[in-house]
Length: 415
Image (cartoon, rainbow, N blue to C red; front, side, top):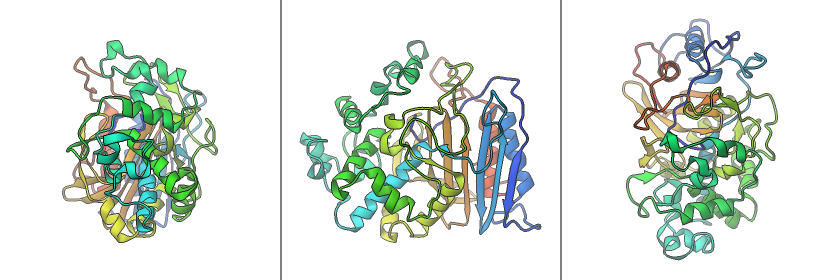
């Protein structure tokens, strides 16, 4: 759902297990189970448990103080049994928002954008009237604009979710090849009732904010946001397999993407072929786990934006995610604190059928990027709350192992 703070759901029983696929690079034989060491066998075992719990396929890259481990478990295609591999490309959803935010901060550095200037100064026809005067660029970046989410209007059968008797996944199929324009999606969000006052706290997560930022980038750079970000963020970071799609199909080896939509799609349906105009600039990116780790590493190392800009990105406040969780969110970045393990920065995101997360410790010495090809696996109870699923525990254990090392490390549950 091009969102942050989501949980993912389970697949049909009886799924055949595919051979685990792992590789290690620059991992010394004596690597230990610590905050700085890597345990390849332990990481692979923890990843295999995610697959056994019901995830069709999962793959990841873990970095620890210069050491790298890559692994995969399960299948990319339930019909053929084709295995997932560590270097596959994936639709990464709202991780794209960090790329957008970095691009906006670059323009702030050049003096073309002011963070606390009203968006109406730049885009008076996009955000007109009093809202354009009150909502600042910063409020769009940190989701405190009060602008509503457009997704329920672009996908009408989802409007009443989580009231499942009144909700249908029909819109997912209806929109598979529909071509949305940013203007019509933005208009949907602006016409919807506001979710808060500009600058209010907590903020409320809305993809509409980042579509407006895409229009802002185009206005001040004279080129599309996709082209600007490709040249000045993706290429600056040295990423080789990160692109914005130019059609409904993913280029390069990738898994099929299975959507269960909280048990309403059973068995889960493949949405790997999909026109991503419904997400726009804020969630349509395709990448690899290696590229994501490289990007967040170079971002925190000051290679993408200046330290002063990175400091602005890390100024956080409370934001209500699309699953109703309160997250600590800055300018395109989440903050995750694990007691006894450290503070991590990154993002997570889903689109139909795919979930991806990327986290890096504040000192830059520990990272994980992990991708899964099934989402919204938790069925919903009568109160609208996701029910617990074994995937939740297995995924938390894998992220704990990846981020914190030891088996006795505190639970890591960024989602």
